[in-house]
Length: 350
Image (cartoon, rainbow, N blue to C red; front, side, top):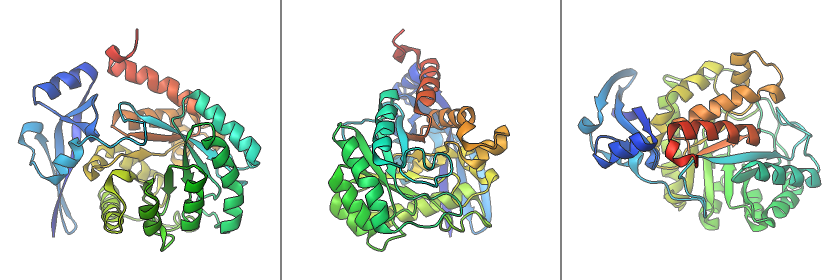
C-alpha cells in the first residue's frame, strides 16, 4: 500500500515569512504566524521502498496532510502558539535520570515549580513515576501521594499544570487537583481506561511515542525508517483517541526522543522534525539532558548537559515545535529569546 508524506523544508522566519505568506509563496509551518516553508520533501512509501523528491510550495499536492501542516493549532487555555511554549519539568521522584530526589518532598517540588515559572515556564509538568530507561513502575497510591499535593500547590498559584502519568485514576485525580494537561509517555496505551478517561475529563493530552515500555525500551530498538515509523504510530494513536471521544483540538504529539530509540535514531527524528506537522496538532519536543546529548557533547553527567540541551531546544523551536519540555528553563528562555529576535527582529522590542 502506498503512503505519501510531506516534510516541509526551506523555512523562513519573521518578516520574510509574513511577506511570503501574504504573496502565497509559502505555507504556515504547523500553523505558525512566524515560520513558513517554501518547499517540502514529498516522501512516497510503498512496502519497504521509499522515494524522496523536493517540490516547490506551489506544486505540492493540496491533500489532507498539506492542510494539516498549515492549520493554526488550538491554544491551550489562554496560551496561544504565537511562540514556543516552555514546559518546565517538576519531578517528584527519587530516581529520575537527571534530577531524581532533588525535589522529592512536596514542599520542595512546589518551590521548584514556582521557581521555574518565575524563569519563564508557561507550563509545569509534574511527574511522580520515573520513566527513564530500565525503570520500574510505581504503585498508583504512591504516585498519587507524591504528585497531588504538588499539583494542588502549583494550581493554586494560577500556574498551568500538566501531569506526567500513564494511569487513568491518577489522570482523574490530577485534573481534580488542578492539572489541565495529561502527559502520557504511553500515548494512552498503558491503561485500558486511559482514552475513555481523557475523553470524559475533556483536558488536553500529550500522546508520546515509545517503542516498548521503560524497563525494556532501550534493549534493541529497531525501525525501517525511524521518522516515518514514529509518524505512523502517532497518526494511528491520534486517530484511535479521536474515535474514543477525545477532541482532536485537545491532542498534542511528542515523537519521544530517548524512548525506544538509539542515539542515532534521536538525531534522525530531530533532523526530520517538520514531518510531524503533518499530524495537524501541536508538537512537543522533550530532549532535555538525555543520553544522546551526552553522546554528542561528551558530558557524562545528565545534570551538566545544559548547553547541549539548550541547543537542541532552539533547533526544535526553529523547526516549529510548539512546546519545549525542559529542565533548564532560564537558559532555554534566554537562548530562545536571542534566536527568535534574530529570526524576527520586529518582535524583539528593541
